[in-house]
Length: 457
Image 1 (cartoon, rainbow, N blue to C red):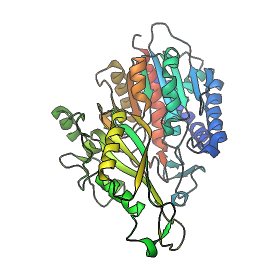
Image 2 (image 1 turned 180 degrees about the vertical axis):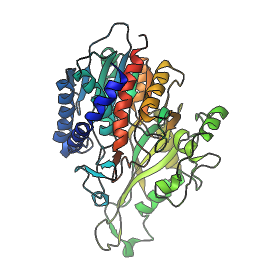
Image 3 (image 1 turned 90 degrees about the vertical axis):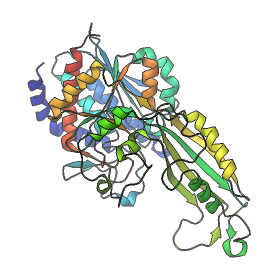
Image 4 (image 1 turned 120 degrees about the vertical axis):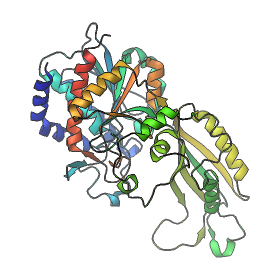
């Protein structure tokens, strides 16, 4: 099938592609919200039906949580096998009042589609689904076998997929995994991501008195758990952004001079601080902004809760305080070993008069892909044709926990092809996806199948 024919066909189908994305985005598939179990299932059913209607063999894989959708096209002798991975679950939409339009009422403004899940990850994974389904609709066979695994628990750590990977290994066997759940380097500058940071998430509860106390009668005589929590949180990172936990940097892999030089040569984009609405940038000394967010470990407080949260003043000394926090890790750092180090640190810095309980949530190591693989070459050609400019090689500061498991279990190459932008507000209010990049992603995906199909198995 000629690339010209497919490009013409995709152009004619653009409105349908967008309409179907809007349908999917209307389903509030928040995997962390137990009240949304039916909606998460509905989102999985939607993509399963879309794939089945195209003629793919589709299977719903039940888990102890939300189901996974698996599909495959027919095997092609002598051709590679590619696995497309994505997720149909989304982050919670709160705070709702910061959305310009409701999170699950997709709205087009200024060339962007605004909705929760627009870029993370419904919009991006649907670029591959559209390219595959449209190819199947022509009646011409795909030049390779494509498998798809679209899960409903990525936003809560992919625990069930992680646990089931050994039994799914034969079904998912492939030469290369393709994932679009990341970003371009900047507007008009596509990128291939070859590295991801890992993650470790926690909740810390600090307990003080048995109940809230009158701050006038007891303040100054009883340790305030909220103040103790602030001391503990600030003790984990210094004022320059360097993490203060003993041994934290022992296994951190240094950036090579060649890699730092390559990143320094990347095309300059608009002011990064301005693009995210910050007055200025901040971070670990001795590293550029790209190095800090792609290849250095970080500590962040994700949420703080204590005392009176309602309207007006209530002068209490709260009985307890809690924080949700996370670390982004780099290759060679082990999230399981980090928990022991954090417990030791908190014990050492705990103020008198309170106790603490640390609860790990989920963790995953960082990953690096082979930048010299033949699949990388195929991706470069496809993206250059679709975006009309060559992609640059970058790392990504975010985490996709299952990627390392794919590499380890399936022994495959990995392509992280992001069509989003750094200001798409993933995980934040007013999440968006540039509609033109949505269309270009579909075209690049189509050309990728043609490029990989020319490779031998």
